[in-house]
Length: 619
Image 1 (cartoon, rainbow, N blue to C red):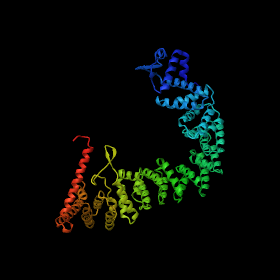
Image 2: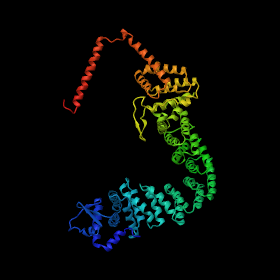
Image 3: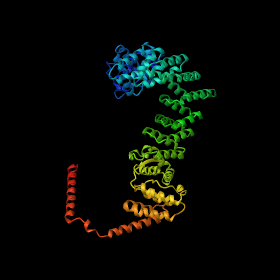
Image 4: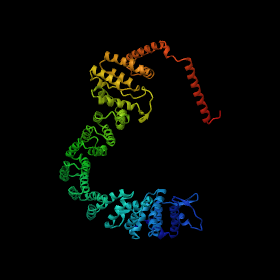
């Protein structure tokens, strides 16, 4: 196969232009620029290339007109450099970093480096596998690896599908490549090689399952993948055999492959049952290494088998923290495709009922619950409530529940505020102190972060400084209407006791008036809370909020009456207090007053002098 057809054709038909194009390719490679300065006529004559349109000139610089022609000439220039350095191992390896750097700067990706290897293999019959292995062994022997020399591995992996190489020689070099930045490319290479033919699949599979290095053994999984593309029954059979192996890594490979097998045809339904029977034989005997892979496999099969889904629910009730961590990680991975499935929600519900959560597990649960909010806010809130019931509220503000699953609560606040308000109302109406603490933490959380607003379909977070401008969490009318009067009274007492943030408490107390059945007792209690507690401790902030609330369009008559009565009582109290004479014992002496004023003056004078010294403007 000809990997540089334009170079071949121009060299044969236009030899004079060929020389000018070779010079241009050399200049571009050396300077790593798309155009280079035009040389003196006595150095090289570029006119043949320019006249035939292969080159273009502009502002004293020259470059290729066609990227495909440039590619071929750069490849051939680089091939000559590599051939010249073939016997000098370090220079040979370093050249491929130069090729990479030039390619990046002229924006052609890895195409040139890959083509260089293809030409070396097809035309020069160079032993690329042996040379790459020598470079790998040289770098492995060093105390500090030279990352710049690893580019040859990336080019080699990208070129492999088109290289004419023997499988026997390839397998030995994979272990060396695994230790480089290109190691991740080996997996797809093995899968594609195995998918090429039965003989390839047999050789690669048999070679890897007896290897000593675990990373090399793991490649048997990808050999099975390749085999399954044309002989799925045989791939399934071999995977079942692996699950009986005494070697843990081979059992894991077998389980993992059986878990991701397609089982799409009716004929393969028998294979699915065989897989589940084999998995169930492992389920009763706990083994950390096997069970973690088994969990992932059951997760892959849950959408195809009710039996697999039911077993996942069993695992979700496990007290073993390793199993729980792996299960939450699997749910995280499956969230986008399975969040609406009943098994997915059921597993989550069982998982959160055991009050033992690491930070990593909470991160995964936060992500999963957020997905459930898309189509089932009720289940999402049920999940949050189970976590809240088992939460340790003695760990301090940094470990508060809303901070650790903040994505869920922010989504609730921004797009499901009514559902969040319903939940908060139910929590404060319950007799469970855990839920009271959870509700107060949630309210405190939202008063410490920016708040969502919608503006021309674009959402943004903005800081709001007053309670009036904040999308307040309030008691939900529908829930309030289901509560008897005494329960509502307890809700108000709990709010007054737990909520210390003046940005939240007034709105929460007022929202209790939204009950369908008006209660004079509840209205009177709210007046007392405002006048004797809220306005007493925060006369300015709370007073400003209540006065502004009276001007809102949606304020109710009940609210107006309560606010007015509370303000009247508060103002009467402060007016009366203001008129009281100062106690002589509390009055400072004239000497103390003078010294205080003198200290303030000196402090102010010092601040002015410092400001003048630091000012950039002349005074």
